[in-house]
Image (cartoon, rainbow, N blue to C red):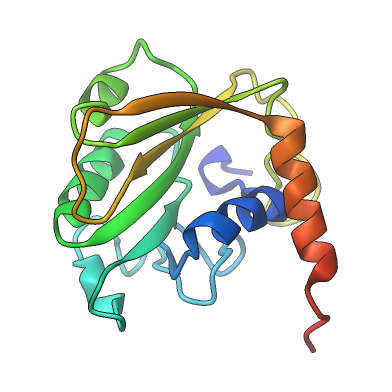
Length: 175
């Protein structure tokens, strides 16, 4: 299985979506999308304008778990789209030594490091946790139309996952 296609755990996504009300998953496929509206590889989110999905005309938030093999173009695209009113919460590996991180902190408003454990991403074919995640994770957050010096904070993995499980448990079953 291609690690670039691993799925974000639904409980992690639910906790974030409660805060950001995601309208679109911009780096997804039919097997790993977490929003009803998503942009797959064929439609290429890196070349399209995400504002086409903005029905509110006041901006919204997108979710992005980019292919870890090439994060830089996603950082650039998130920065570009934020200027147009489309916020982005990007889940990436926690590595401050790479060029894409140095580029991201020039344009994002928040960096949230996940502490207290690693995220177990899901194999989109089996739905089971994939093994071998050898790095921690963090969120890079671009707010619509916003720019200020980035705020760096920490969020505990287990608290985030517990919040997401609670949200998912409260959702009515859908057919």
